[in-house]
Image 1 (cartoon, rainbow, N blue to C red):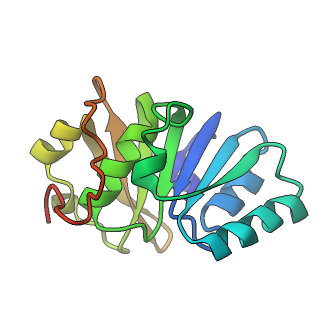
Image 2 (cartoon, one colour; image 1 turned 90 degrees about the horizontal axis):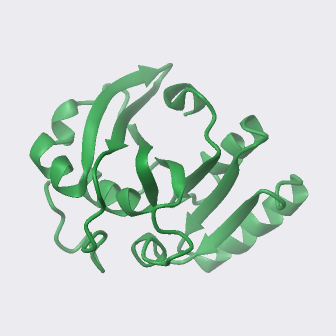
Length: 170
């Protein structure tokens, strides 16, 4: 994931971090980055909080326990991150809709994809409605990824309360 991102960001959000991948390894790789690990399951949040402490990362990383679409609407989270990463968060439409609201203008989302990513999973018109452009898809070893750049202003409707119920595209 770090290879797909390129230069280390000042701040990043890991959507649906689960057991901490890729958020914890990225936090270790980028010693100056401020990270937010977003997870909705309480048990995993407890584990992640303990992991941050055990790895001596709690001074520059935090766990936000809750749904990404709700957290992305909080003023202290909205449009603040330089980078959003996601691995196994959800379908492309849901991931993009949640990611865009965390990103500052010009921010980058790097989303894990199948080993041979298809740009067709990221339709231009629908991405543009969210304020994204697809910079491309690629591979870093066996890891596939899509890179989305946030362009333009953020529409207040994103993310919707339950984007998975009615994805913007399929």
